[in-house]
Length: 605
Ligand code: F6R
Image (cartoon, rainbow, N blue to C red; front, side, top):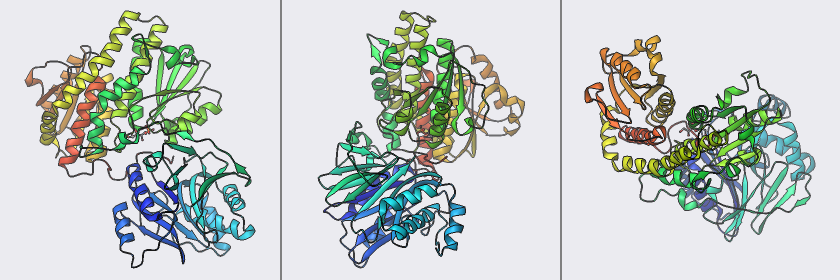
């Protein structure tokens, strides 16, 4: 969601800015722009389209200036439509800025600034912020003071890169809540909203903290405290191998990431094993999970769906009461919290605004928070009292795939560790479970990947369905929720997950001739009951695709796919549904890696 890039160096800025914007595309956006210090002044180029359109526009300039400094942006529309006018950078007076986040009081500020003579050409909150910076700068002629003034006037979240016309060849950056990093490399100095934009140039970076200012010039990168005094900062190593972010020979990042699933499981699990058993001193160094009387899992989207799988494992294996909450709703609920409650926040990116807001809230109430995160050095890591890492590697496709598999796997491992500690199961059983997770599940997934043509054929058969229900009971229902989300977000088919037994209490009214229903059935306990629900659907003309863990009579459903997972059916079968959604979307001509309206990292609440 929105991306920022900045460059100051001895070389031409525009190619670096454009390259940076291409690397930020995965975050999701609908317009793009850049601004450079040309010899005759600041020059801005914007487009309502893709970065490739911006590049075309730049290349088509009659006289392209040689500029050594500039800022660029990909915008995911919040305030105002995705038009060229609303695209960043925004220039007001002597200031040009790009901005991630939301200025919540921009309406009142806009009116106040208009009274002072400012004229706005866009509908964005960003232009208001630019006007405040200009106002502050005109008043005192000092940039840190202008930044302090603007910050003191706004509420909300922001990461900003700014250029001030009189201060040639300098880029200034500051932030609150939204992340921003700076880096220095042999070819110049960079600013970016995440490391993927710079990791090809350097293996180190500086996370910019709130109350700090970064200053980029062609000859160096420096930092200031908010009051303008110099600040020394230590760089942080980029842990992620940026090559993992390349799609290589795969046609799409999503397919490559689905194929990464077996490694994602092995690497995530291996890091927490000692002598074949999950190590509580690594998984729970501060004892939060051991002491917890109740566990609250808070997350959004796919991460929340993984949490629901985790809830099942925590309750079933470890006897730990577990509740799942949608992060964006959590603050409006009135949970009766008590001593012994512990919070687990799941987030692939570590930057999801709703999840971070919920985390700040519970920590403010005095509860401890564990973050289960895929991205090292993310905001969630910095906010949490303890961290559990999935080691899935970078996820670039907007739809989360390998991260979900890794999240479910790690939750299973933690639940086993807590179960062993609480003497709910013995070490022999835990060893068996770990073997199923670390050894059997990756093999099962690898076999499924090898059988992808069969999955593709099933997708082909159903990809024109106007809508689809995913049904299951218990754990199968939680997997149905994730499978339905995956399908709708990349293929744009209206999908709905339903507890199989609940269908007949209303929703079955929607089943008619050829309505597609995907039924998920694993284990013995719910098998016959869900089969009855399948019969109810088929009796009304619905078409049923059954995905199950063992042999079933072919006449049970119209189509059958078996994922022979011994213990970790949701983890393995998730990959079937990821492929099912991928091929369906492809056959429908959708942009699989960058589905419409979506952002990879959702940094606004
Ligand atoms: C769906 C998807 C989203 C994310 C959600 C949370 O494929 O990717 O639903 O799971 O936005 O993101 P993180 O895990 O980064 O907090």
